[in-house]
Amino acid sequence: MESCSSDFALKNVVVDNNASRKPYSKRKHSNGLCRQACSNFSLGAKEKAKKYFSRFYKFRQMDFEYASWQMVNIFVSPQKLYRNFSYHHSTRNQWARDDPAFMILLIPWMFISTTIYSAVLGHSFFGWLKLLSWSIIVECIISGLIVASFMWIITNRWMIRSEHSGVVSSGPTSPTIFGGPIRSDFNYRRHSSVASDDESINSDGSYSYPLVVEWAYAFDIHLNALFPCIIILRIIQPIFFYFIRRRTFVGSLIGNTFWLAGILYYVYITFLGYKALPFLRRTRSILLTGTVFVILYVVSVALRWNLTKGMCDFYALF
Image 1 (cartoon, rainbow, N blue to C red):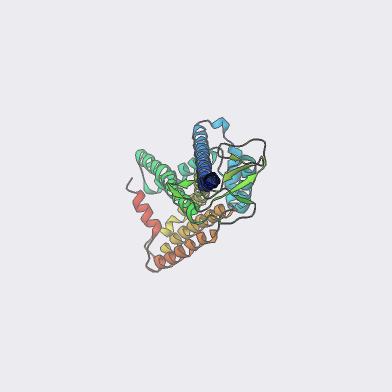
Image 2 (cartoon, rainbow, N blue to C red):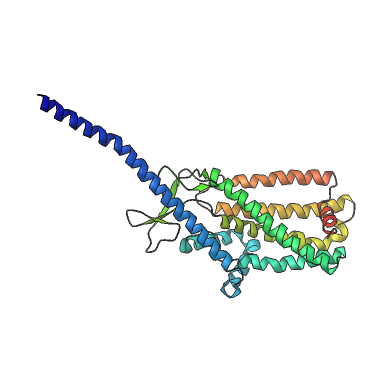
């Protein structure tokens, strides 16, 4: 009788051990998958960034013809431009451009516009050089780093869809942005013979990668939206400087209208860029910022705040 009871107790102990070990094994397995996914994603991002910037001085490897086509389509058909980004993602498994050819092609436009402003303001050669450096480094690159980083954080934290067709769950955890969790814990799944650096292999032979907005793609959107602003505000607007720089209501109206057109174009191109990502939600909220700028435009014109004249006064300091 004692042997039977001891055997029963032993069996109970074994069963209890298995029950307590099972959740621990699941947690350990989930944590392992999370660490593997995060490390693969970080490695892929670093490798792509290294590859991108290593081509900055390799002009022969840049596709300037394709970048020029993109510049034309920003004005002619911006939706067609972002459809091409989708095709690029389906073949290269990334939304961002492969090389900085588009950014390189922005520099001649900055050169031309800076020359126009320097000629109007009567700059010396060193004044022109300082204004050119300011335009490229601050107005183009640094502003792009700030805007792209801001939109990158906003979209990854609050605009990822919680559910999406063609998406499978990857587990209870997901990659992080600046140490914080991304709201989405879903992965795309695709069948392919080769997996990229930021993909992980599934049990069915398919490959999955995390649904996150690439920082490089956010920077590309900024460059796309900045190009129309350069053309409108720095190439076309100087033609009307004779009227704009006068301290009249008409001068404020014309100058601020150019600013409104450039800003609204920037907002629209930015909206199309994030709308092209199928896993984002609430992208129309980006268009609401245009309403704010319209209100500021009406107020500035009513108060005769000439933004163009203020910009020229600032550029005259160089």
